[in-house]
Image 1 (cartoon, chains in turn purple, orange):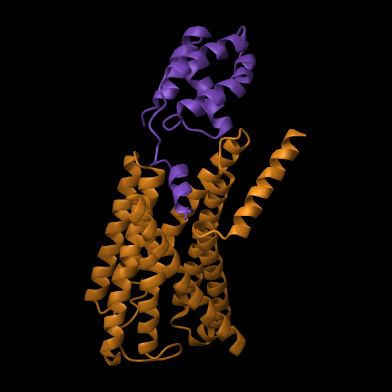
Image 2 (image 1 turned 45 degrees about the horizontal axis):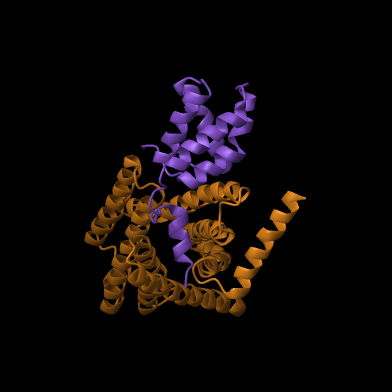
Length: 102
Length: 267
């Protein structure tokens, strides 16, 4: 399955800013997403930004990446440039949100 | 024994009426939103638990009810017609469940569409061959056609339950970051529990098929099995109600619990 635009944007910024290999950057981001209950193909820019702010710093510290907070700020800035995807009405949480509606 | 019979009858009635109400509610929602998932799920619940079971119970009653031993060629025509309508509608509902689970949880997974296609094929092929062998007049227990149809009926709620619990686990992790609606998170738990309860009801209802040749054992196990089936069915329909027609008190309770958990986590 293809990864979402938000994931690809964060991945590309992380790879550049943290001097990680492509595989390391992808793996680190996936771990952070997993901890927060998201999946790379469906995560939105807003959700990705929260994961980058609250989970990614810890992941980068555990990988001994220099200045993790600064790296995360850079990734957040890259995500802020990204226009969020249109509301994903077909995602399971959106579907189940509607199903209980009046 | 009369109490058990009354409980079984009341629970069965609750299951049929509850499925009709929830199914119609979701179809009404689909009409307003124009979205496919609510159409699929509403149709699935309506066709299986509501109309399908309704016709199958009517067919069972027309054939003489519990304990009746009618020769296949003596089964009344009305019972055959009711069974035919019931099974077609029920299996159509099962097919809708299969499309629902894939289109909502695995829309881009080819293996999932393939699995749903194989399951649908087994279901309808088993039904068609079973009917050709006289399956509307008697249960062709043990035949390949019977197993083919039953296998899908035994397993489709398990797939729904598995996907729902998997997503519930994701939503719980999101909730810790304030990125999940507590009511929606709870809805996945309810749908998972309801689906597994429906599976348990179907499995227990199928147990007597294993003792068709042993009438003494069959007579002994039938009462507890009917109670178990009814209890699982009640849990399933209650979960559907709380998930898709949640009363105000239940919404409030879920929100209060989530808020208390959030406060405990921050202190």
